[in-house]
Image (cartoon, rainbow, N blue to C red):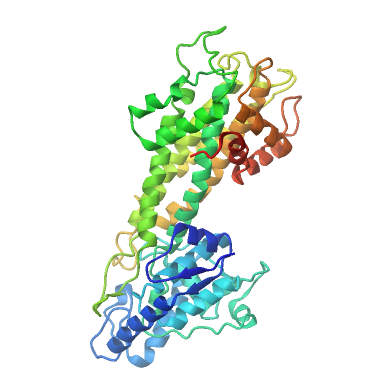
Length: 512
């Protein structure tokens, strides 16, 4: 596993994924250590002056008008961490906390926060030791950044609160630090504030959602192609020249993926047979347009994430000319908006997938398939309730698509009177991504069964590869009714871990 070196210029999405999900070790570059020391010198010089400087020699938020005596400043920094570590509810996932800490470390290493090098080194040591602070679901308004979640992380650096060890057990943080030879940080001027003031939680969840959705959008193109095939639809609507005259790049990519999956199919083009159709239904014919719009939404969100990954988010910040200035860069609006936008795209992609599944199960619209793809309709219910489950997931996704970023709630005695709610947007997007995975899995389950029921017609080579792989994965095919939940769980795992796309690409080569 490669070591991720954190410098002054930010990090990449692949760095975040390597640390958060892969457990990659981190280290500080020499450039970052020098920048940390230089900015700390500026803060120390300001701390020695009688003039009040926000975050250095004053209180915080609505209490910023009080000038703090030098003897109380260490206590002030400890107190902000303790008082702001006020989260409640279930613990958030380990990968989210690791992303949160790593991204805060990224900003510290920019040399714009004024913390000492040893603070950054301690954060790197905690990550490398596999110690994960206990962070709770509720507590962040996304402004000033993800305060409560970051405070729980900072508490661990101080040797306080609880954390999860490498073995998964939750214990006092001080014990875990001692076991790994990590000395707790004694915070000085500005440092407590610098550990709390960022969009790191929402950004980390955005980066991970983008990675998951890259795979899911390709998976959805595959299942849409399988459904088109099972419904004896036409692949003529996927022709590149049709998509070139409406030049949305995501649409062209989705159409190309579907066309690659369907190459060599003996099922497509039968829409003029026994029950002639001039056109396929929208859920089939417009699949590239809907999935493509989502792909373009991903591209926009990725651009926002890249900018944020290059940013140094803190308040106040140490500028290259030595000034320490207050600012509003901690506001999470840019990230919150795209998190909400992605939730809308996810809900719509799930919605069109569910419509195709319903069409496969309806004998009046499936063009010759048995009702509910049942073995003996009436005695067997087939996939009737699998579609109910899919519909319930889509209903939940529609509710999760309601924007969090429009729901500002004033706080801090009206000093923080407009907040982003970006953490909330990120949390609901994680649920939405999970549910989209399940929706795609159910379409896969129905479409592969429907293809196998088209006796006498030969599916595309890529389709045959999917059917073979999914059956090997423990997802059952046509036959009498059986306990469906295990089949659906196996299909979900098959989509989630990338085996669906991998099976197709053994035939098609890489898809977009």
